[in-house]
Image 1 (cartoon, rainbow, N blue to C red):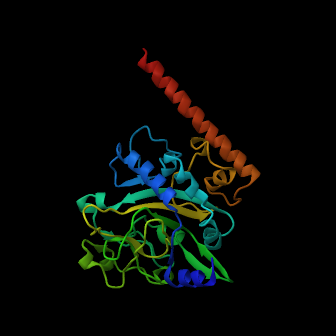
Image 2 (tube, rainbow, N blue to C red):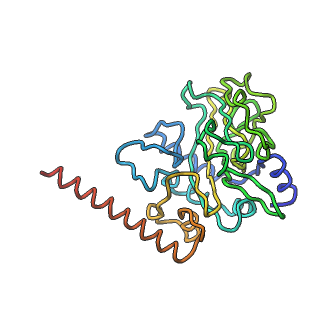
Image 3 (cartoon, helix red, strand yellow):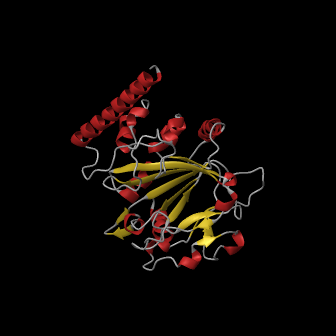
Length: 304
């Protein structure tokens, strides 16, 4: 992360990295996503959940884009992104959750800009994710180091032009000492969006890196009917911090590297460490055994 990028991130709360994904990666990500969408019409896919989709959902680990395999696994620790995350989060950080958002498929009643985050501990009960948001999604810069509670990397699979809609934020709001006024949180149309909100244009293959402390949201999609915005969000925390109530189970992804396994560990003040890795592996194995026993019990009941 060069000095210009550090300056702009500290000033604005986000930066745009050009051509992070190459064409073969974009094609692989797109093909796997579209194949999945043939059987799942949800506008938001991935592990960003706080409720069960059905009674069979495991409580300890949730559905994830990583299940699509291929390039989705590569994004866990993409070499071009890793140095930025280490600068912004420190040496030990973890993938907290992931999801994909397809804007032209959002239900009509959800096509609204909802600004959330922003300020130094100013989330409060009115914010999107509850009263802990302002404290956990923090931002600081001190003694030559960045400190962030949650950093998002948004990979764009399609061109998103100015005025199309999509990701938007209030530049600089990550350093505000005052909470975002309630009257500015909701905008049902682009015409209602406050003038100080910036919609961030990006091309397919670009990545937007932003701190969750920056007030942000999604401007209602106004692109042509035959176009869409498909964005993959991978969100990272310092290793001792968690935003999502759900954790990853690396047993579900046998093809990942040892470094990627460490990136999927649950939060711990110790970070990746022999003791914590052993505890985590035991917990994952126990979950796998529980799933096996439940399946065995269900089969026994079915044959009675």
